[in-house]
Amino acid sequence: MTVLVFGQSGQVGSELARLAPDARVLSRAEADLADAQACAETIRRLRPRAVINAAAYTAVDRAETETALARVINGEAPGAMACAAREIGAVFVHISTDYVFDGSGDRPWRPEDTPTPVNAYGRTKLAGEDAVRAAGGVHAILRTSWVFSAFGQNFVKTMLRLGKSRPALSVVGDQIGGPTPAASIAGACLTIAGRLGDQPDLSGTYHYAGAPDVSWHGFASAIFAMTGQVPQVTAIPSSGYPTPAARPMNSRLDCSATEAAFGIPRPDWQVGLREVLRELGHRA
Ligand SMILES: NC(=O)c1ccc[n+]([C@@H]2O[C@H](COP(=O)([O-])OP(=O)(O)OC[C@H]3O[C@@H](n4cnc5c(N)ncnc54)[C@H](OP(=O)(O)O)[C@@H]3O)[C@@H](O)[C@H]2O)c1
Image (tube, rainbow, N blue to C red):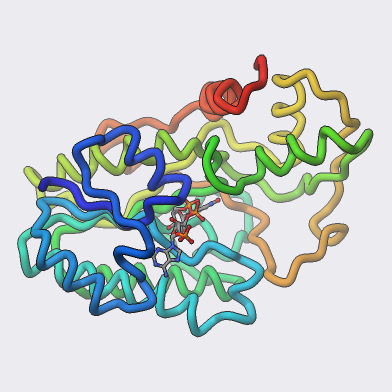
């Protein structure tokens, strides 16, 4: 086996399975990240050349109260898995998030900027990043943002559902980021895994998000413009949509190091959105 993927049913995991039919893609039933040592043992037993961790505790609001479980899945398991990958000489590609940053300012975050998460999910993901680095193997931590696809739950599918039943929607207009197609993330992970095998010195932390940066309101407007749905979309401030977990206002990610190291440019989210909408049966 060459590539082992964790997170079969997720947005990115599903796209990895589609893009790399030869990869072994594990479900939660086969490898539960709540049992970090069992996941590490699975890596040692299967001996892949590359491991891609697309599994995570992604319920951002629930992580505020279920923090201990989120910490094991996002914070501890990636470290144990990265140690096992190092032991068998496999590269380890780990997906992380813009939510490790506090969202201040309006400059795109660089990989070397100091992370100070504003919610429990972000803190558990940051713990996972630290554990992967501490494992000391050949690795890439790929921070992405605002993931969407035809699989799983995401903003695009929520907007399509609400757009069917409501004549008007209020959507947050003061959080800015890069919507990122899961298919593009899957492609980037596979490219990076391949390159790290030849060039272990490229190990490090990278950013990868769709372009151009936009607000949730702008993203929602694009969804409805492409599908021909007609709800009136009004921009509201984050304060008008309180959630259990705080969200960073500025999620812009500076992805230039990823393009420089691996030749992977930011994907155009409008192209990815059109493809996802078609897959979901919209004329787009
Ligand atoms: N979604 C976003 O907007 C976003 C933004 C930035 C970064 N990210 C990061 O991108 C990566 C992929 O996200 P995604 O959107 O593809 O996630 P997703 O669709 O929510 O899928 C998460 C995957 O993790 C699996 N998982 C959860 N708990 C598990 C456990 N205890 N053991 C094994 N598997 C478990 C889920 O399996 P089950 O179906 O069995 O629960 C599912 O396959 C994650 O690292 C996430 O933190 C996501």
